[in-house]
Length: 69
Image (tube, rainbow, N blue to C red):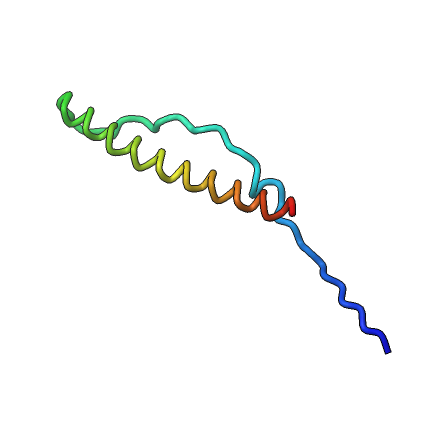
């Protein structure tokens, strides 16, 4: 008796691995900010956002590499 193994590979949907453009910054919070507070808010927000964006793009690239094998 011969047994054949069939491997079925289900690939992730294109929406999951498609590159996304970087979104624009949201509006400044509605409160009284002095210039230094505004600069600090922006620098902190953009640094966190860029880190998250780059990590998600790296994850999607890894999924694309896996799917192409």
